[in-house]
Each structure stands twice: as C-alpha cells, then as structure tokens.
Length: 233
Image 1: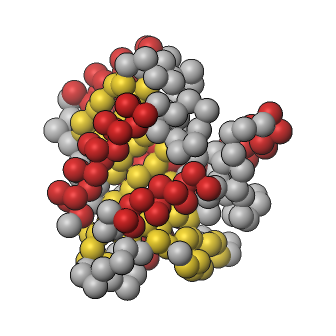
Image 2: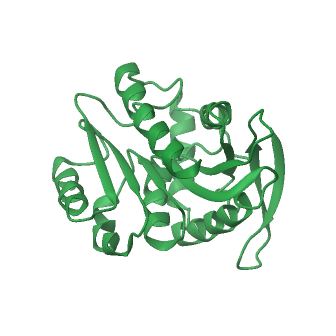
C-alpha cells in the first residue's frame, strides 16, 4: 500500500488516497473503493487488499478530510457509532462526489493502470457509488447496501454504464417501501442489476462487522468479482 495526495477540484486543499496494487506486471483496471461512515478503516483496507489480490488496482480516498483527515474507526462501540454519525451528518455529498471524480481520474493514470476504472462503495459509499453512476464517467459502479438510494431513482435515466446494487432484505436503514422504489427504478434501466439478499441486515458484507453474513457476502462478492473482471480487464 502507498499513500498519495490528490488536489480537490474546488481548490480547497488536498486529500489522501490509499493505493493497493496487484503483484503483476500486466496492466489492469482500477477500482475506487468508497468508504462507509467509519472512514478508511481496517475493514475497507481489507477490501482493497482483496481487490489487489484479484488483480485490480484499488484506491480508497479519505472523504472525511474536510472535517477530520485520517478517520479510521469501527462499528464496535457506541462512541465510535456516535462519531461516525456525526461525520456523516457533517459530510457534503456533492463535494464527496467531486473528490471521487478526482480520484477516478487519478486511478486511470496510476502506474500499471489500463485506463479503465469503476467504483465500489459500502453504506454511505454505496449511495455515493450510485451518485457516481449518475454523475460521472466511471466504467462500472457497484453499491453495497447504499442508504437513501430511493431518493436517487429520478437520476437513474442518466446512467450509461453498468451499475450493480446489493440490497439487504432486513436493512434497518432502508425501508421495504424504499427497496420497492429502488427495484422498480432498476427494472426500468438496461444498465442496472439489483439483487436482494434474504434475511440479512445492513453491512452483511462488512469484513469483521457485527452483521457479517458469510453466505450473502460470498454470493454478493462473487457477482461483483465477475462484473469487475468482465468490464475492467
């Protein structure tokens, strides 16, 4: 892993991004890995390493840098949850998308990159991955249990690249009505594949998380791996 610095598009400063490269001499696609409300923590870093082991370049930007650079917390204590929610509530999602666009452009030019790049996000990052699908030129986008995606359905007609949605049936942050709205919107788009995982809660694929579900995570990650392999090379 190596840390690089990227300049914000609005000229307000620079932020860190953490790059995980595969052990290969061949060029490969890149994946912008988008954090949950816990920052670029151990779980997200483990995901980046897994992607690198699969032969992709993974790059995870620090999206909370405007509030507090270097956030890395877990879901194991009330204090950490309170801090995470405070950071999320203070986070400007439009500026976050701008930072992700900068990261995406940088990812395409990293050493060993083939110029093809997508996004992969969890929770807050899952919502941001959908926003990247509607507002950027990412070649593919994958959203795990994104929150508030139902509010983005009116933007689905802007999508022009594959988007995969992984949805938890028992997600405590996404109502059944919201899920129905998302599925209806996805059905009308030729670009979107949406999968609902029965009986699991939010963050079922979080490495080391309290709601981790092995079966659902393996199935979802397999679908993601197939899609990324097909589109990123």
